[in-house]
Image 1 (cartoon, rainbow, N blue to C red):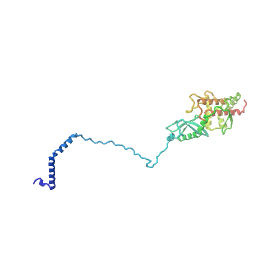
Image 2 (tube, rainbow, N blue to C red):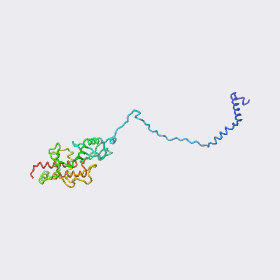
Image 3 (cartoon, one colour):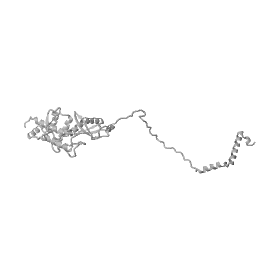
Image 4 (cartoon, rainbow, N blue to C red):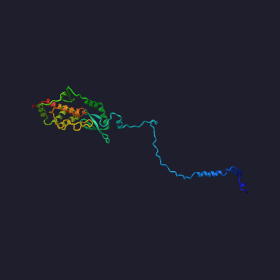
Length: 313
């Protein structure tokens, strides 16, 4: 049995068709062209070994952006004091003025320092006293200054150069009324008046003066302390210097340093000298509590004892 006889009819017809196709390709000279062309195409490309694939580093995904406007949600914002300080004119930085009431009396001061650790703001009042404010307290004293203290600062700076009238200086609780002649620059005491003053002081001028402020010309406790502090400096010859960091006098500038002041001195002359010191070195931003008010109280104390003459000299 031949090999062709073992084939099925389909296989035999397929073999014959392939043979006819090969014979036709051979007659056309194409039977060997395809293998040769295939060999040339392989030779034209040099062999390059395949590279091993390496895994790239993991990429951290960026945060997903979300729009509160699209989601119809309001922005959650908690205002801070720093934001209020930057945006509001009522919250100043170091060097700005403040005002606060003590026993009904308004005192002015200046913010000199801010402690970032404690959050406190240091204030130096124009009379030399010091106090620390919290953030809430600072807002309050700043508002008081804007409403009332600013006017006092302006009034102190616009004092006239010459006055030809007299002014009555008194308090609501004062038991003694005294006219201070502001058109008089000097009024020295006579020897007889000096003897009266020396006799009534009994060697304790400061004690008598404090009794006068407590029982006769009654003022608030804070004002009494301030007046006593300034007059004590004058009585001991220490002198008075404006110590404000923002408005203070130049270094070495004192009012009556080295001269002991008492009730037998020419107080009106001292008031005139004090005004000259402010004109030359800088005005008092404390509404007169540096020199003017203490000297006026001293003058009234002097006149009180001169008018109440109950002893012979």
